[in-house]
Image (tube, rainbow, N blue to C red; front, side, top):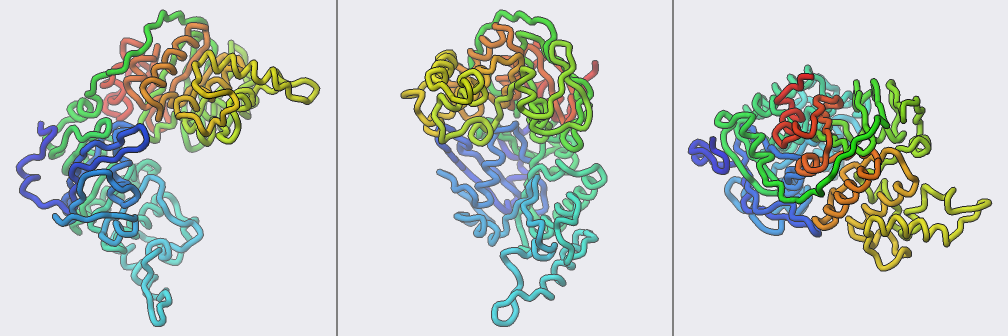
Length: 511
């Protein structure tokens, strides 16, 4: 295996584009640390890594959305700087994302040539040339699409073909495909594979990002692995096995210390049977007990957050039932969920979890106004009392309870959101990425408090993309892939390798 270095074959070729020593830091987070990446003409390089490994950040560096703090970009062995996406595109670098960035109200041709429309006399757009050239490009990739069709009338697969046609319209040298098969049927995926072969024959350098190992080993020529913002391996795909790739992805030390817990698992408090959503998940069956922390793991697009939002009544299901303490529960809205003892701490605390312009005490008491008001009037003293109780329990650090939540650190904002829902005295608390974007000290505090909640008999669902967190905190773990539960693991079965293997479809779960 050639992990960490390229083979002689790779070294003899000249890359279309090369990144060396790329570092990118955000406040409190080093997203990329001196990473490298090489993309070769007529070849597919698979970029592999867990959620949060740095893949999306490097794509944004390649496409001019982010500027690196250090390092070089070499295009055909010449140094370049992509100060804007337009400059990257002008230099032949284009990206086709999982969610195609196109405009539904425009025609296919207008989407293909948006920003670089062919011009005629007096600088006006030559629409006849635009439609003719669009038809040529669509024919090149075997797409039977009318250039004059309005984009919103097309299906997902054809929208992907339009996005690829746009890449060809600028004579792209580098094509980035970010989870391109996530929303496609198997027939459409096979057609995409054929298209990739066409692009390879045109000497396009392709960066292919996917969590699906069967796709990687089917179409990739080379691989590069990122882990925690660093490049940990690269080479020819024929020289690496699936288990070796998994080991590269998860082979870090678990350097966080998780709280010791005396586990007292009680009776069943939540039972979900036959839960279905038309597009996001299907055949969901699981249960949760008092005092238990149930981890949910999965890769991008697995459907974990969508399932949790449905359990909280944010989105509607098409089938299935929920029981709370053995009794059927009807949850059609978040208010219904709270009334039944289910609360949800969302991943995006800034948009969904807290109101940044309001002070701490008002955020904490927002779902509990019935406890802090009388005859339609809010009692300020009761608000402060309730907010103080839960803020102290969570060791929330702020100058005062009057401090606006938007002025707090990420970790303290997360504590405000948790305090808000704990004040409702729930039976089940759903924590969606509870430590995402917060520092190590705040992570430890959240983990300690999660352990305390479980010890007090609260049933906890923890959705996390951090493998050490799933391993270190879960009493059981459920793994999801493509909207389905693909494994349910006991505490002894939860390992980094088992989580990734089931999530990526490398291993099939046998009950």
